[in-house]
Each structure stands twice: as C-alpha cells, then as structure tokens.
Amino acid sequence: GAAARETSEGGERGALPSLNGISPPLASMNRSVRVNGFQSPLTTQQIMAFALVLSSSACAFGLLFPFAPKGAERQALISTYSFLFVVGFAAMIYTEVVDPVRKQACDVGALDRNRLVCQYCDNEKEMKSTTKHCHLCNKCISHFDHHCIFLNTCVGARNYWSFFLLITTIVILQILHICYQIQLLVRLGDDNSAVVDRVDASALTKEAYMALAGVFLVFPVVVLASVGSLLAFHIYIKSIGTTTFLWIKAKRRMRLEHKNAAAERKREMQRTEEEERQKISAEQQQADQKNLAERFVTDVTQVSEGINAQKLQETNV
Image (cartoon, rainbow, N blue to C red):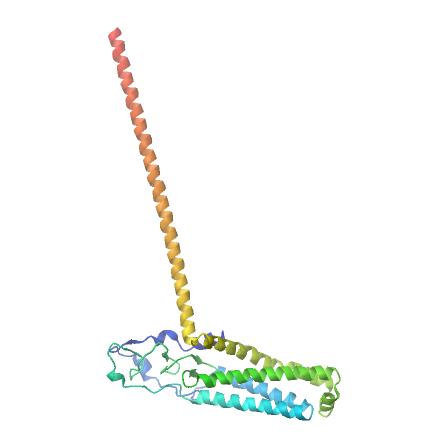
C-alpha cells in the first residue's frame, strides 16, 4: 500500500516515451530538475517521517537505555541500537543526497532514429523499459522503482540498495525497541531487583514508568507497522525480480486485461442472446407462415366444396 501510494506521486502517465523528432512539452523543459531529497521545497511527509523516526529513537534513549540493568546486557543493547541507528541514518542521508540519475551511457544523437527517447527531457534521453520520467523531480530515472514522498526523492538504480538498507535497519530497530521495552515492563511487573533499582534511581515511580513506557510504545509500533509492510513488499518484488513501478504497471495491465475479457464475455453473451432471439423470431415467422398457408388451403377447400355443392344442387333442379 505505501509503495503504491509513493509510486503514484511520480505520475506514470507522463513517463510515456515518444519517437525522436517529437518536441518535448515546454512546461516540463522549463521546470528545474530536482537533484536530491534535500533540495527545497521539503515535503510535509518528509518532515513527518523524520519526526516520527527521531521520536521513536528519543523514546529508546529516554525510556529504554537508562532503565536497562547495568552490565553486559545494557552495553550490548546500547551498542547494537547505536550501530543500527548510525547505519540507518547514513543510508538515509545517502539515499536522499545521491542523484539517482545515471549518466547517459552513449551519445543519444548517434543512436538509431527509431529508438525511443524521453519526450520531456530537453536532451532527449534514451528510454528503456525500466526507465521513467518522474514529473516531481523532472528527470529520467534509470531502473526507476518509485518516487518516495517521505524522502523527497526518486529511488532508482543508484540509491535503491541504500533505501533497502534504510528500511531494513528501521524495522530491526523498532523490533529491538518493542521487544526489550516489553521485557523491561514484564520484569518490572515481576519486581525484578535490577530493573526496580534503575526505576527507583530515577524521578519516576514504578507505576509512572510503566504508564509512560506503555504510551510511548505507540511510536515504534506505528513505525514498525508502516515501514515493516513496505519492507515486506520490497522483499517480495525483489524475489520475483521486478520493481515497484513495473509491478504496478503489470497490475494495471492485468486489471485492464480482466476488464477487457469481462467486456468481451458480456458482448459474447449479448451476441448469443441476440442470435437466440433471432432464431426464436425466425421459428415464429415460419410457424406463422405455415399456419397462414394451412388456413389458406382450408379456405380454398371450403370455397371449392361450396361451389361444387351449389353446382350439384343446380344440376338436380
């Protein structure tokens, strides 16, 4: 669902290539090209995504680490979480900073004139089956996957795997946060001395900490639900060797084929019904003609018999 919504922002219909020689629309040519995700204007979704992820991490640093028992367990938790956070943050920065456009592999002017080129780019970039012109970024993306409104940039050949690493680390962080937070709450409910001592050393009571931690578990749960479904979808499309863009195109093509097949079945049923009506009508006409002929023969016979009877009567007289 999330991937589909992100892709729709890019506008698939505008990606249709044209044969060389067709002038690209001036409106698209005159617009500036978005280089990366940090180029203004930033999107509301981008700011909300940053805030949600940072809020989840703040909950971990504020309600998780300070109350973990001292020793190797606490050090392992902090080290693991910090490592994953740094890796994920670096992947996010790389995904947004890098320009997903690949340089043209060859001189388009030297290509066969029958090759498809982008009708929107002023340098007429070659269009392949995996290339798409994004109208939000106003550029062609090689191996286009989707335009991510939460990163404010396109995801393509140059930054797809950093994007995949980003959502993977986010999911792992949220699972780690949720599982350990629940474990702390359970141990606190069982009056585990190590956890109780950490809570007593803070300004919170046992009941206040349990209520606060329970409420703020909403942040990692929301992040896990949204990003986890996105990660599951990308694992699926990678397993079948496609991209979000091509998957959506295939689904639309399948829906169109099903719609056309249903329309053809309906037309076939209408033709069959019409043929059946015509057949019944023809049979009715034949029956009417037969009845008419039989009545005509009967009438002629009666008239003939009447004439013969009259002649016989005259003869007798």
